[in-house]
Image 1 (cartoon, rainbow, N blue to C red):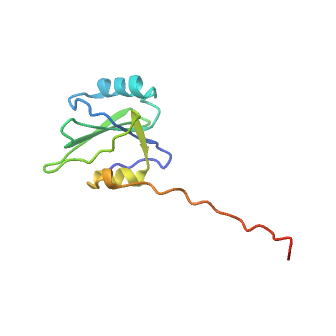
Image 2 (spheres, helix red, strand yellow; image 1 turned 180 degrees about the horizontal axis):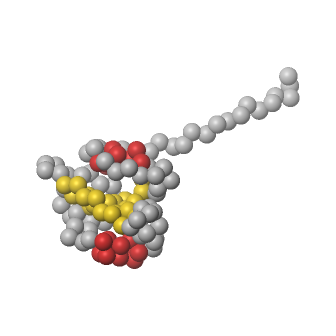
Length: 122
């Protein structure tokens, strides 16, 4: 499993990529498509066209690292969106890597705390 600092941002690239790409090719996608610095400490996830592989690229204090996972059976259920990428939480990343079907998950609205109003009538 990946161990990440708590302040690491996780981006999932929506469109499938050629999984033969390595450091330079994936960094080019990050720079051109997402307009983000690939060595800024964020983690970027990519999937293959067959949806049976996931690659992650991250830069730590010592350099870039690529992590790859291939499913022997089944496919990753990847979200589709109108944007080039989506930001995930660490919990969502863990769920994705545990083969949770992301197409059936939806985020609930944020809970808002309402303070009681003072009633002038007593």
